[in-house]
Length: 65
Image (cartoon, rainbow, N blue to C red):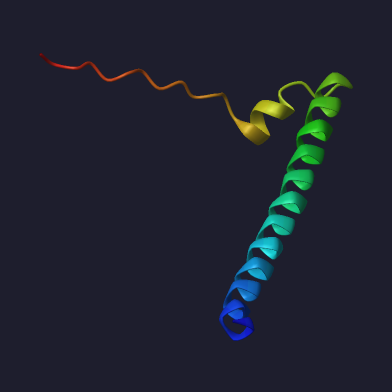
């Protein structure tokens, strides 16, 4: 049974590594976003928009009947 669980242990380690990477990337993104907003507040108007653009809103498709 322990031999059968070895692939599961490897899978868990892979998932844990991926989640840790996602957590780090999220922190980097949050810091960059916060810095852009702070810079905009301190005299760099439009910096947020230059870095991140305008939010895009998609229209719902019309369903033909």
